[in-house]
Amino acid sequence: MLQYAVLGSGSSGNSYVFSDGTVSFLIDQGYSVVELKRRLERFCIGLETVQAVFVTHLHPDHAKGVGILCRRQPAGAYISSRSMLEQPDQFAKLGIPLQQVFPVEPFEVVEIGPFSLFCFATSHDSAGSVGWFITYEDQNLMVLTDTGFTTVEHKQLAKDANILFLEANYDKRMLETGPYPLYLKRRIDGSHGHLSNEQALLFLKDSGFAGNHIYFIHLSDVNNDPALLEKAARRTIQTPFTVCHKNQWYGPQPEAL
Image (cartoon, rainbow, N blue to C red; front, side, top):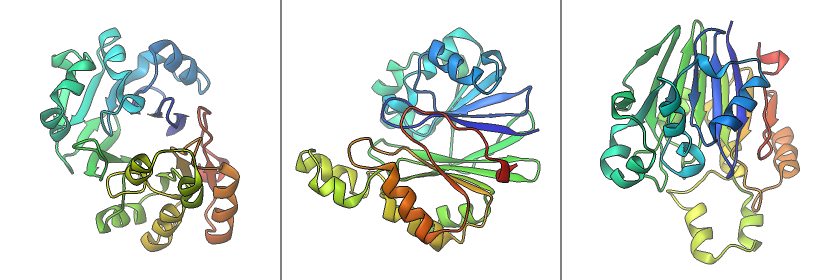
């Protein structure tokens, strides 16, 4: 039976787990092994079942724990070839044993136990950033985070997804009036930054997403307010959703099972 959970989302660390009870894998690993183990145990998933980590990009809140995990146990690290080629120093800092590194290209299918995955390009200020599309039996799950804009490709994939993990990083007004310096505001709302609440909700409409559940992820704790996003989402979408607060964990909702 498929199990999945948001282990944590936000600037302090990001990780998502998918499991059939025997084989487990992560999308991103931004935690220490001790903290990762603690979060997995909330969902009765053993650390020893984690066979792989699929990385969206090399920023520390998404990747700093990959090497630590891979040095502890023989998990594979799947990272876009472009990330490794264009950011060799950041990749090297992770300290992943080279025999456990598997470079991947967009739409290259990877099989792990009963799961199939492929990555697709996103637009972020980390070269080679990607999202991931996961298939388990007749269910499709999509993780789309850390991208400054969405594409026709993204929308086509979302239309086929049953469960969607979607970035909603900032409220535009909060960003504009907030404490960040101008250059950082421009980075966040630029084409290589993050999706705003408005962009995320428009994406859902334009993609025709008709799946079972949406998890809004990677909310800024400075430039967003979960209550604002929840209010806006209730006005515009009918699909059940969860707004993921920073540093909290969330398992599957009943209507998504």
